[in-house]
Image (cartoon, rainbow, N blue to C red):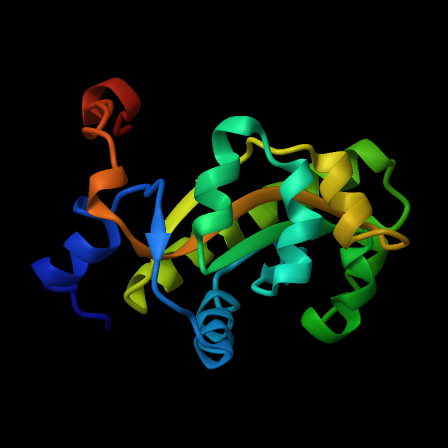
Length: 196
């Protein structure tokens, strides 16, 4: 049976973790491999794991990403050592013979209409985005997730000719504490939950 994490770990992952608007530091390729090797274990529907991630590090990749960013997100995104473009593969079901080998799950999805497939893929890739942020925080990185970008431009620049569509960007690095805003309120348990 798993043991509860201590308060320091819970703080790092949740209570004191923040969304940063300026970043510094460097992130090695080895750390990005380590990050993926953690996030990949998060559960998704029928183990579809539809997220496809481009880790933007090079100046050439930044030059492709820059024009897709909204004005308010440009500076903070360009300052991040790495930007994770999280997309979702609309043909995620092609991998199911490997990912879900105990039964033939590919027919569960392959004949669905595009809107339904997008819903399935986006839902599970959203879970994977959350796992990415928890994995990053567990490795000592700070995050700045955001959706303020032009998806069409990102898809043309990074996913052209593929069935992958962009969903979320996550800026990664060492966050500058001066760049965070006061924490916004959260709903209390009784406002958001009930026990039946």
